[in-house]
Image (cartoon, rainbow, N blue to C red):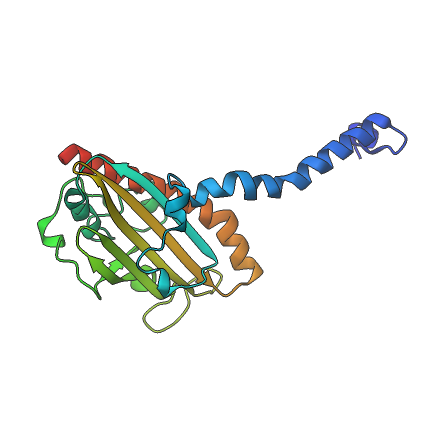
Length: 236
């Protein structure tokens, strides 16, 4: 053992005991700092307390989710001008308006549109919105109220058409992805985006979601909402 570490852990050393105690206290506080300080930002970015508690269409599809994230942003345009960007979302459609290079780095083949595409505006209940080239990561339109609400749902995300689980720890997930538009004036709209996810609570899957998916989802979701805001306001 290096001399420095022997000195640090030497029982008779007051300095070593104090340093070890400080290190232990810091390490033990990290989970609490994440849970109380960082994680709320990852799950509720931009949203007010009232918006987080608000019931949205699609919530009933997963009554007791293990993950419930609500994000919000104000867009300086009417809801009618925000809606077309939502209606054309998806892989092979108008994209997801997030970090395109990151999505393509993992093979999602996303291409973000910067204009409204008329032929992609006829979205209807039952249509599939893919997040990747295959249907393994596809969500179905469960609720559609033009200029108000779009709910995408998949009770078996990460499974292919034959019911075979994907490679996400071989675990299926129930997922809803809700987009809600709430006018706050004639020229401003509040966009709320909510993810509700449920899964078989294995340790591996829970750790993967908490430590990997939640941070990554926050980063990509924030960029997506800013992308929708920028595109809408630029063309409004």
